[in-house]
Length: 67
Image 1 (cartoon, rainbow, N blue to C red):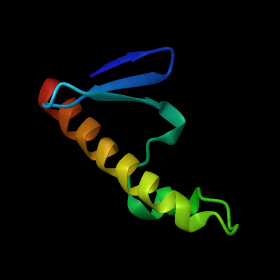
Image 2 (image 1 turned 180 degrees about the vertical axis):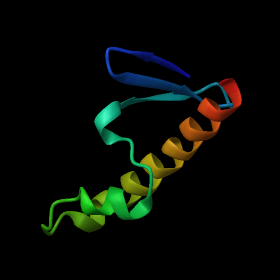
Image 3 (image 1 turned 30 degrees about the vertical axis):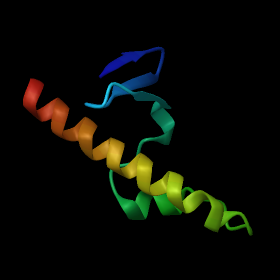
Image 4 (image 1 turned 90 degrees about the vertical axis):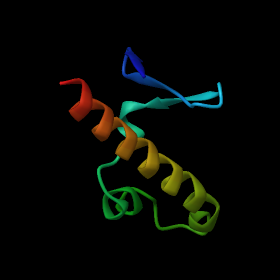
């Protein structure tokens, strides 16, 4: 995992990866869902919320392991 300019590059074991802006990382599902605007597009964003939460968990674990 690398961070540059507030964007985290998270690499997967499969060789792929994803870039995530720091403000899109949440420490809990409740926090992530609270950030979703209350409009009709909420269902479309549920997948992203779960993915971002999973990435945050990886970041928290990675930080603890590398401290």
